[in-house]
Length: 71
Image (cartoon, rainbow, N blue to C red; front, side, top):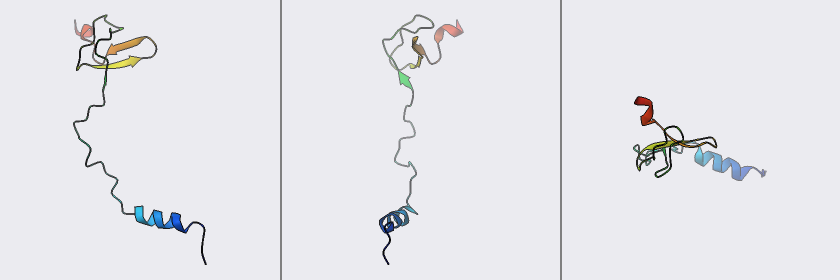
């Protein structure tokens, strides 16, 4: 007897012991946003290359850690 889902069962069986870990992924991968040249909507300073930034709604880019907050 043949069932319509046999290909699905075979695929499921082949994936049963598959390794889905992300070993090949670089652990130093940068997930931060960068907006070099944009003006920080919070402090008015230019966001420099390498500085992390975030887009705050429609109000524009801000430093992830705004340097004006510490001054």
